[in-house]
Image 1 (spheres, rainbow, N blue to C red):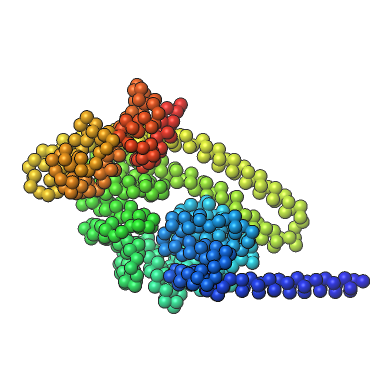
Image 2 (cartoon, rainbow, N blue to C red; image 1 turned 180 degrees about the vertical axis):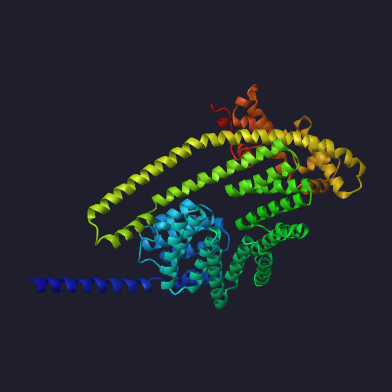
Length: 602
């Protein structure tokens, strides 16, 4: 009887294995060959043109719904890797999610690519949660799992969760090795090298970079080799070997010749600027940073480098004892950082602005901006806390625990697993409760402090502007013949005209109208405004927002208690939405939040 039972089990296992092989074969031929090629090209990395070509071929020959949906997913992926994250996100949003939910494999592809796009958009907690859902299925594509684990590793490392990050990176390398992807494994070595560099283990960092370089030279991938050289620059800057840093920067220049990618050039220019700054070659450093600014910055990465370039220019002009020019670039960096919404950049820009005011002996303004920088840093910490919550919510952590339990199940009883699970759930609940409590407690205080600092900064800027006008006007009278002096005089006439009787509150202000009022022509006036690194509309909006803040902060005025739409109209905005956008760009808060926290009880 036992033998018969064993035979039944044997035949049952054979049947299951045969069925599994059949299903696997079906999955391999499930998609057209051109679509499979497109996916393979995508995971080879830096083959986006080939990916798009194969996808277009697939759409032309195989217009069925399932194939079309997967093609759209990978079109979004390729666009994202060409540094057009917002366009990729829009394309993915247009995919009917309800239609692909019944297909588990399509959903895995969708989540993988959406996680990649969220990562590129710096939405780390959302990316981590979504990517974690894709690695639980061992039948899913090895290349996709490897890339998703790499992204999760980068998120962990960027937030200081180094141990967790290295674990994900090692799992990623294992998947890439199983798929025969040496180049992807080399990219993991590059990331591992950056980790070692961050933690001060420079010898190990150098070994990892050298391993990555060797593979990229062998595979003749000039684009990835360029980024390996960028890491060498950072490494030699860290250990203060400026001659070798410059050597690799020159190699990067050579690599740039193979591409028409302005983003690569801005990266090299900024690195060269930093090297020259450290060598105290301030004029040369300024030249490189100005090259960065001169290049188009349509993509998010380019805009970030432009902010860093303005900060670099500001620091160099401080060293050259040109504080006014340093201040100008510091203000541009701060304005761009505020638009970016990236708290770390806002911290660096405000901190740099504080240093400029310190050099100018404007201690009050220096204090205000330094305090704002600290608030930005606190805000960045709160965002990191939100991402930390995702570490506990994602299924990926549960998979890891389950894997550990698998190794221990021969030595431990089921009760131990249950006890450990209960303890983990309790720990998660307590941790989440603590995080939520801390975030809720600090949010109102942070907003009230931000309102207070905005009011102080605007008041100090007004006083500084009046002082600067008094200092500049006598000097302008002596040198009216110089073009730049004429431009500044015209700009000063403009600001004086706007401030007189608060003309900036006129609803239908235009460049042409103001030019006629100042007895000049539109082109001269436009050039004079642009020379101050500001646009006409931004200048008008700045005055209007300051007037709105003046109204809101003066509790004695009846206007302060009127509807925001009325205040918007009173200061010159044609629409409530334009008022909200301009107000938030200037202060970091919308008018309703500003008013609420202005009169909130202490």
